[in-house]
Amino acid sequence: MTHKGCTLWFTGLSGAGKSTLSERIFDKLKKSGAKVELLDGDEVRMHLSKGLGFSKEDRDTNVHRLGFVSQLLSRNGVISIVAAISPYRETRDQVRAKIENFVEIYVHCPIEVLASRDVKGLYKRALAGEIANFTGVSDPYEAPLNPEINVDSSTETLAESEARVWVRLAEMGLVRFD
Amino acid sequence: MTHKGCTLWFTGLSGAGKSTLSERIFDKLKKSGAKVELLDGDEVRMHLSKGLGFSKEDRDTNVHRLGFVSQLLSRNGVISIVAAISPYRETRDQVRAKIENFVEIYVHCPIEVLASRDVKGLYKRALAGEIANFTGVSDPYEAPLNPEINVDSSTETLAESEARVWVRLAEMGLVRFD
Image (cartoon, rainbow over all chains, first blue to last red; front, side, top):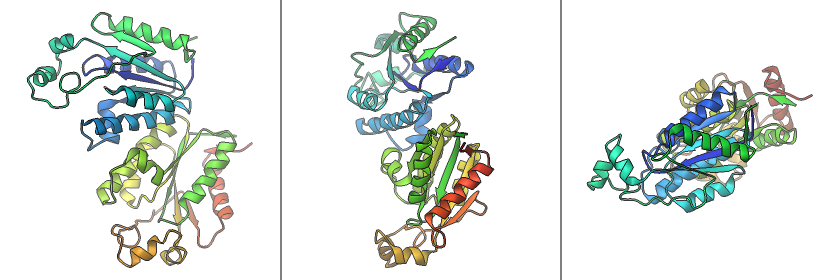
């Protein structure tokens, strides 16, 4: 395979499927010999953003740090995959402006579906008012207006979402499997 | 030229010449077409470590973040150059343990010489007790015991220090100019 350096930025609500889909993309690229890194929001918080909370300012700082690292990687030929709620449109667009091949992937899922799945029990608690600054419930989520890729985990299978990503990356000339 | 991914970690007191030497190395690598990034301590603090101070804990956090980013870059074939006081031996060694090709470059200069140069006027203020946590004066600096490269900006010219770096990188098989 051949590829260009780029950033695949997965944004969406907690539980929408960002980690699952991004890990699938990462695994396939890795097995194919690509230079690829996965920066998962939760994990990276430990390394880069310990001590930050969930205010708008702290969320923005976290997103900018992810963007800074992703920029360094992708301008050196690496596919940098970021999975982070990254709820603010303007902040994502600031990151986009700094990165040459920026691919925004909006992982959508209606909040009612997320609340009924509620794998970690967080939505129940958030809807009961027990979690402040919970994106989509007690904190805003600003959906991308014009993302490079839209997927919807409430209406598509994981395989369908994945296929959508590969098709678009090929169309954009970023990834080619021989 | 050809090169391997590696981390060139410049450590030493403020004013010893880390930035000057590391910029020189960076410029030559960049001009030769290498994949190379320069992470300068002061600059990176703005991006990755805003809000951190100069306690041991905060300094260590800053060094670990630099190490995290440098690890991502160098394992993807990039020469990552870090210039940071990074005063604690154990912390530098923790970073070393995570990075395959780690080259520690100790930029030495006796404190008397630094105090007499005192480009930014910081040593005068630190020696007068006006700056807390100033490395080498009111805060410790633990010199590397066995760095890959030793340079001394009080006894060598910049060109001599630079030559030392190129010779050692070639010996280690990390950089080759054709």
